Each structure stands twice: as C-alpha cells, then as structure tokens.
Length: 219
Image (tube, rainbow, N blue to C red; front, top):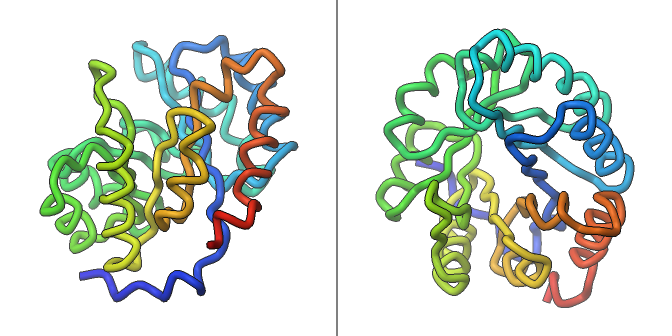
C-alpha cells in the first residue's frame, strides 16, 4: 500500500500534464508541442496515437520524443506499452486495472506505468498496491462520457488524503483547472481545449499555468 499523504499545506503547486490529439499531423503537432513546452512548466506529455501499424507508430514516437524530453518533460504513450522502449518514450498510460496489471511488469522499474479508467475506489487502491507511478481521474471514456465534476473532485480529494502516489486530474475546460487543483491533484491534465484554442497553444497553456498560481489554489 502507498504510504500516507503529506498534509495539504506541504504539497507543491500542481504541474501540467499535456494530452495531445490522436490524429494530428506530425509536423504540426511537433510545432504545437514545442510552443507549449516553451511557454509553461509541463511535467509530462501524453501522446495519443492514431490507428496505424507498429512501425508507423514507432516512427511517430521517435520523431516527437527528443523534442519533449529536451524540455525535461516525460513522453508517455497512451497504451502501446510494447512501443515505449522501441520508440524512446518514458512510459505508458494504461486504461483500467487489468491493462495496467498486464503491462506494468514490462515497464517497471525503468519506465513509467500510469493508469486511468479506474471506475471504482477498489481498482484505484489496487493500482496503488501494485506500484502505479500515478493514477488519473476525470478523463473521458471511449464514447465521450465523463463523470460529473463533483464526482471527480470527490475521488481526487480522497486520493490526496490517503495515498502518496501522484494523482493526475483531467480538466476538460479551463474552468475546472483551479477546482481540481484545490481538490489536491498533483498534476492537472489538459488537452483538447489547449490545442483548439484560436489564440494558439502557447497562450492557452500559459493561461492555465497562470491560473495555478492564483491564491485560491493554495487556499
């Protein structure tokens, strides 16, 4: 079992966890990532991959990994644990406790094994017991459905009080960022609304980072 949490007042400001679009043009995505990484303190980039064969996906990872890692951020693949080492990524994000258990032994201890899609507290506790490097709450399911924000806040707050392993909270829009940070998330995941912002990703991610410095985050 993970060790007990530090008191809320001892937690640092949450860091950002950037989630990419899956089907973006590789050249445009690289430019967007460089702009985002140059504009904010991003701890990790979750690379969502399109449907393609392993060789094409590996080449995609290889094309992006150095750009992300040169900024000190970790490149995490959404699924595809077998491609992590091959593509030079830092780890994989698995969905559901079963996928995590299947893949964790091939990733750890050298690479990151994170997990989301945890529909029950029991599954989240299993993830902690079995060495997840982080858990994620609040991401949408395949059909686009997502728990209510109150339910996500409840899960994040519970985790923050009990477990030492980091918690990533997924913000679907800018208005959720401060709420999830105040709930106790160690990382705030942001994605579609960053890449679709007409002002550009640099301005969008900078505004999110600025919101994490507001007094109400630490309140």
